[in-house]
Every structure is written in C-alpha cells, then in structure tokens.
Amino acid sequence: MDYKRNILITGGAGFIGSHVVRLFVNKYPDYRIVNLDKLTYAGNLKNLTDIEKKPNYSFVKGDICELDDMIALFEQYNIDGVIHLAAESHVDRSIKDPFTFAHTNVMGTLSLLQAAKIKWDGNFNGKRFYHISTDEVYGALQFDGSMFTEVTKYDPHSPYSASKASSDHFVRSYHDTYGLPTVVSNCSNNYGPYQFPEKLIPLFINNIRHGKPLPVYGKGENVRDWLYVEDHARAIDLIFHEGKTGETYNIGGFNEWKNIDLIKVMIKTADKVLGNPEGASDSLITYVTDRAGHDLRYAIDASKLNRELGWKPSLQFEEGIEKTIRWYLDNQEWMDEVTSGEYQRYYENTYSNR
Ligand code: NAD
Ligand code: TYD
Image 1 (spheres, rainbow, N blue to C red):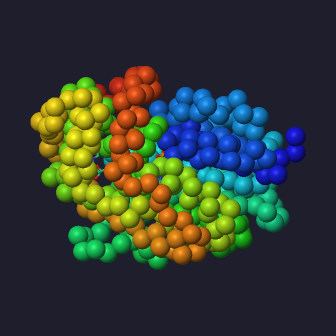
Image 2 (cartoon, helix red, strand yellow):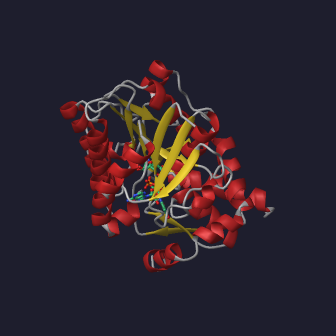
C-alpha cells in the first residue's frame, strides 16, 4: 500500500514514545509509522502490544548513533517525517554516566539530522524533522512566580539537560545552516502509564505497594510542573502537523507541585486504592541526601502553544494522578517485568545504600 506519509518515530518503545506511536498508528491509518528503538533498559515492546499487529506499524531495532543504519532506514521506508524521542532520559543516571548521555543524546541526534539532510538532499517539500526536548534545558527558577518561555536563555545544569540542550542547538543549526525543516518542543515532567519505575511517580507507587521506603531528595521542596503523558502526545501530534518550521514550542501542565506535597497526594491516593487505612504509608517517607546540582524549580509557560495552535492540557491533575496510580497497581506484571534484570541490578547498585 502507498502511504500518505512515512514517519519515523525514534524511542517509540519508551514511555512517551509508546504513547505517541499508539496515537499516530490509531489516528492515521493512512500513515506508515516506523518505530526505531535500541531497546535499552528503558525500552519495552510490551508497551505496544495493543497496536503491534496493525498494518501501518513497523518496529525496527536499531541505534540512532549509527549513521549508515539511519541512512539505510530513511531509504528503505522513504521517510518524510521524523519525530525524535530516543534518548537517555534519567537525570540520576546522567550524574553517574555522562558519556552515555552525550553519545546518545548529542551524537545520536546529530546522526539522525545528518541522515535526513543526506536523504532529503535539499528537497524539503512536505518534510519535517521534529525534535522532542525538555524544559530542563532552561535551568532552574527561584520561588518567584517566573516561568520559562521560548526565549528563556538556555542554562542547563545536569549532564542530562546539558546533553539535551546541545542536541536542541544542533537541531537549530541544521535549520539555520542547511534549511532542514525542523521544529522543537520543550516539555515539563510527564506522568502516566508505562513510565520506567526509576522516575519519581512510578518508583514511589511501586514502593508504596511493597511497603518500601520512599527516598525524598533533600527536603522535598523542589518544584516540578507535571503533565499527563497523553496530553503531551496530543501536543506532539498538533506541533508535528501545524507547528511552524524553525520554531520552538513550550509544553506544560500549568500544574506546579512541591515534591513533598505531590508525594503526600500519591500516598493518600495509593492507600485509598489499596484499601489501606488513611496514613498507613506515611511513615515510608525517608529523607535522603539531595541529588547533586538538583534544580530548585521548573515552571513552563505554554501559552504560545495555546495561542497559536489552540492546545491546552485536558486532564485535571487529581484525576490524572488517580488514574495513573490505579494503572500501576492494576499492572503489577508490567512492573515486575521492568523491575527485573538490568534495572534491578542498577537499582541495587545505585540506590540501595542511599
Ligand atoms: P524513556 O527513557 O522512557 O525512553 C527512551 C527510549 O529511547 C527507550 O525506548 C530507549 O530504548 C530508546 N533509546 C535510547 N537510546 C537509544 C538509541 N541510541 N537508539 C535508539 N533508541 C534509543 O524516555 P521518555 O521519558 O519517554 O522521554 C522521551 C523523550 O522525551 C526524551 O527525548 C526526553 O528527553 C524527552 N522528555 C521527557 C520528559 C519526561 O518527563 N519523561 C519530559 C520532557 C521531554
Ligand atoms: P524525576 O522523576 O527523576 O524527574 P526530573 O529529575 O527529570 O525532574 O524527579 C522528579 C523530582 O523528584 C525531582 O525533583 C527529583 C525528585 N526525586 C526524589 O525526591 N526522589 C526520587 O527517588 C526520585 C527518582 C526523584
């Protein structure tokens, strides 16, 4: 069959990528969706069992850092659009192993850009290279009500955010230098089903279930903005189709939470869902040594996306967090699977003596 578009989604077996793949495969039966993923510890094809047999879906195991493979992939599938999510994504891991982050996030993005430049060869009509990034590139805010906008100066602090900032700069450089039709979005913290349980929300839900300590970094006063992952996927769909070439769009939930307040909501909701008496898991809160270079506050102004493309978050946080907690508690098999093997070893080495 001749597809209307042939879209490469990288990192589609990961948390956000799997939601984007699902949305595109279901919503656009006339697009071929090619999911390219290396299946690192964070990639899990079981995130996609519901759509894996759809005729417009293909999975390719591969590494974005391999330029020749990326060129061959563009050739084989006649790729005309890229939604690039593949990355190393966890700040704590980046502190232990910054080189892997530079390799995957910077060199991997560069090789994808180069593959697009070579294969599209100046014929950019109907082409799009969409790079998914994070608000962490903007650095840290104080408790003063200020927010990141699209013109906030980049000021990354962790090896993770430094690698994402660098990749964003390379994407812009390919637009400005070679005319590649790029677009970038920077989103706040996502939550929802299929997130690897090293990140705050799924880690804490799993620990509450098993009565294990909840390691709160520092005093728990850091602030993050949280967005339900399906709302992010909807924004990605909109920006991919309607975003202006060369532009950046901020995406966020207008939903700031101090970590400790969020943790208390999680405990209360999880205890309710588990049928525990109120307050049963409060004593699991354990204050531990703060993360090195821990950014105090992130807050993102997503009003440009609302003004220009009409997007806004659809889910209220209280509803989203309860839905998420129920999902993890109902999908213990998924959790057991991803917490075995590689992740388990890493978890023991890194966190067990905190
Ligand atoms: P994730 O860690 O859950 O998934 C990353 C995926 O990339 C995995 O499936 C992994 O196997 C794959 N991958 C890693 N290295 C690869 C390589 N060399 N080649 C091919 N595939 C590779 O990450 P996520 O949380 O879903 O984040 C996806 C993207 O969104 C990242 O670029 C991240 O920086 C960005 N982002 C994440 C958040 C968040 O809250 N999680 C917020 C804003 C932006
Ligand atoms: P995380 O989910 O790692 O996302 P990010 O660092 O990209 O924002 O962490 C969210 C917040 O929760 C962050 O301020 C660090 C904090 N945190 C803890 O206090 N304990 C934990 O075990 C983890 C994983 C995070």
